[in-house]
Picture (cartoon, rainbow, N blue to C red):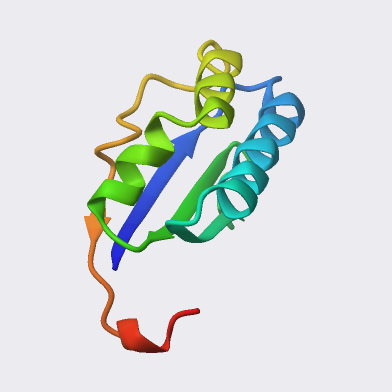
Length: 105
């Protein structure tokens, strides 16, 4: 498994529009990408303008395919001015421990 943990800081005044676009990307990922097993959008408990992405892909190639998917490109372009300039794709890479890879559907 290939796991991404990405914090995203949204600029004040753009959260509602950002979240709408983010959900579109998340839906496109789980519905249209066979290599995307999970794509969660999580609200930070201490900062209303910070969200976290938790994404699980079958491997690094599946994540690369995600980065080239039309819904991702649409999202990236739509939110370019709505988020703080923080690393997005290199925010965090991890590998799964539990549940074991063989138990993912």
